[in-house]
Amino acid sequence: MFESLNCLFPYLANPPTPPKPPQKPQSFSFHDQTWEDPYSWMSSLNDKVAMCHMDIYMEQEEKYVKAVMIDTQRLQSKLQSDMASRLAFDASVGDHGEKPLLLLMSYYRRAKEGKQYSVLCRRLASLNEEFVSHKSPSAGFDFTSGRRIEQKLLDFNQEAERGERRMGRSYGGALRN
Image (cartoon, rainbow, N blue to C red; front, side, top):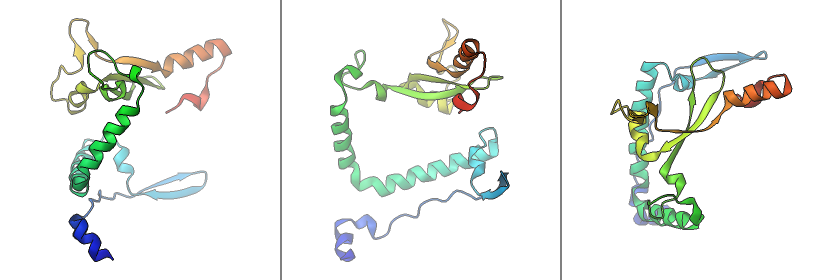
């Protein structure tokens, strides 16, 4: 049975090996429970060495996914068209044709230095690669206004302050990330 599948899907005969990120075990304890997390280094966003390893791993993972999914390009395109056709018409914005707002915008959280909570923001997806890669130092910055080109959707710090003023106490952990 599997031989016939290999005729239909030749890439299944010799599938590429998925990349494995390096393991750097670290022990954690909480409420008298101890466990080991071999991948905790991946969440160390301020560690430049860890982020370098993460970049290498992500590139390997992207190559792996492309190799495995190469024969599904037509299906992916068909599914994408079908999903886009089901979105509400009023979700499109401006003169971008029928592209829905979700595909035009990139949503993210930004931490403010010295603040307890994050800020939920969005920006044009076309600026996203420049923001992330820092290819252009001026990317995402409007020099005429002196501000970032982004829209703040929700500032959890302001919400917490409003709640403290209204209720006379903090939200506690309800708004934590």
